[in-house]
Image 1 (cartoon, rainbow, N blue to C red):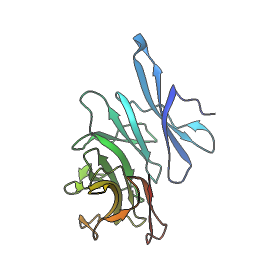
Image 2: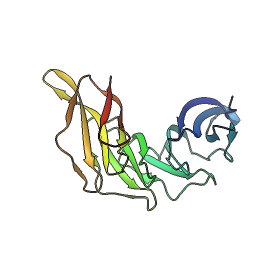
Image 3: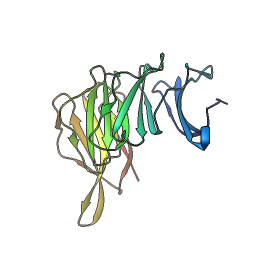
Image 4: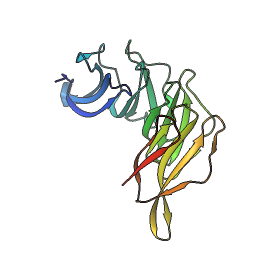
Length: 212
């Protein structure tokens, strides 16, 4: 078993399944909680460097497809709504945190590791250029969005959400053109009251939502 720094709260695999990120919490001085993000090499079971020096509680982590970066979402006074990007090899934070408009619910890297999408609890999706740390246009507008997925060619972004109808909650699936910054067609209606995850097929021609 991997020896985490404390009680493990969440984990995330890299897309190639060769690395694993863990978020753990241990009791520190004066019983204050100490949060740690560790990155592991799955085949050897060895830790990559020292734990990342995150501030406050960390709810979400995601590893980039090239296994070189990790995105974390901290929750502490003054840092709600930020996303930190780390260099896995050095354990150093890359630039200043990304400043999302509100509390971030989830994050996802593009297949080429050049873009990062953050999902806000207000239903907006912001796409970031990882190298420059700049947002790519205004946030994309969704409704109760919980997760996102890039297409294999990095050109499309799909996200699931929920909208209210006369019959109650209705799951919807939206697809956006990343470069053009516009929706591709009208939202697709999906059975169920929410979408737990969404994924493109390897050739990017099919899209599978998983409803509640």
